[in-house]
Image 1 (cartoon, rainbow, N blue to C red):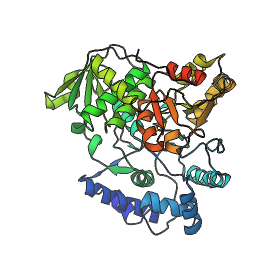
Image 2: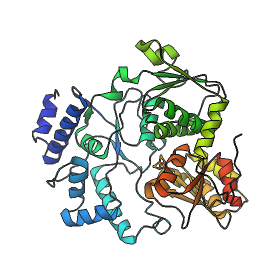
Image 3: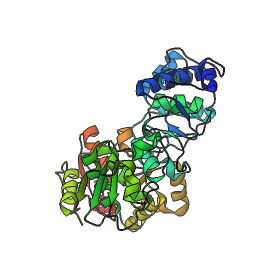
Image 4: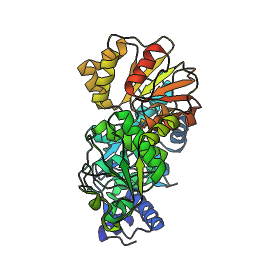
Length: 427
Ligand code: F3S
């Protein structure tokens, strides 16, 4: 791989041992990928903090958070002193909400260690947004901006909706990127890899958030890790609909980039979206495909008694919290059911200020930040049946926790929370 003089100086230790380790890691990573060079990035999103007892023990035995970062973010057995980040970096979701340890089944000891690791990240200059949706709390890269992001639902939003450029990075590559401002120039950083490979023609209207989740789940299943171009969208989707679409497509398949003709930034026309490819296979999404997806997402549901309603995957927007509060106002969560909603810290603050948190808590629900049930592996005690409005969470939670899952609209989920029973159906 060709390195610039500045990159060679970083590799050779000009900026200290940690930066040298980071540049060595990026060089090895880039060579394994077949990248010819690195590209400058001024936007990194990843994970630095540590939230598990394993990490706590590792830090105690090996020399604190510098040792954790050296081993798990720089692939370095040698413990090096970690400097401040060189480029803007935001933090992703974590393993639990440190303000709700008891409800999430986390010990005080783990929370104390987590607070230390969060202070370490803060000192490094990492922005503690603590969400899988950095784009809704201030990290909104511009079209064409080269980024280094982790988290599949964020990556697909970054590429598809914002027209910024990132591959799905890991803890190690973002750790190295934040210390060097560099990432290998390959994959979705390159124009040709962003062109559409499949046309998805819509034969039915796709409007609600649940509908966009179902469409995303279908698209991921049929294109896997390719680049779909969705044509025939009749109603322009908002942020939350695209959030659910992308998260679902990245779960049932490995979609990292997509186009909606006439809507997303690199698809003013179908021809622009596929560019030099000229022709691509066409798949049709109609009533039969929609029903089949709904049935697949509900294939794990059996008992109609619902123990737990989980909302906020990906993390809820303020609009979704507002909608949930309107649906809940004056009602009561059933005594045999729990309602948990997950959102970024900043949006939880806004929900508190707007009075939505009070409405939700008065009804018996709870709002958490920083994590979710899949990340934390935390659900209310004795949960066997979960209802949710996220195709992504319906895909993962049964596999992670062995629970039964129902998928439906937000209104279906709130009804289930209040009645303790699943009565959702395809509208
Ligand atoms: Fe976010 Fe958890 Fe879903 S991290 S995308 S809420 S699985």
